Image (cartoon, rainbow, N blue to C red):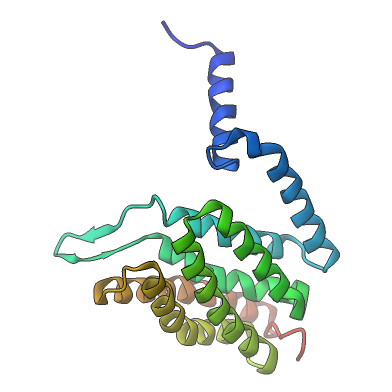
Length: 216
């Protein structure tokens, strides 16, 4: 006997509550209040769509590390890597766009995103991620703030400097630092950043004027 539309809708709603409340339905109302407070704070600080995406990506990525399986290369099974690392690299890119909205206040957004990670991820992953994000974000913030390179160049330079450093910090803190994991994680982040940098460069060329830093 097939399920009716109401049963399917109830199942979808239950799954949505499970995801939002991290399998604690009684947490739903406080979490929704927390989401509203987060959006309000980010908006008051000048953040808009990029800033909200940035804050949401941080706990999402940390949560994903708890369930996403490693991908194994058929010709080199020992070189397994977590596909979530590509998204981790994109966070650094999204952060550049977010800082164009919030400028120096982007560091507050980072703290909020890391704070949410302690609810959605295990303590070890959240702590490792918080440390790695702090290192990478401060480096990225300095590059974004004190250089006058076009945005596409800054995106690539930021990833080149930050990816090896924050990957080492995170993998070591999470307890699975190995050479294969490190190589594939850094490669994934740099590949993601290279694609976004190329797309931004195309846009800069089309506009005929490089996108500059808000401080430049």
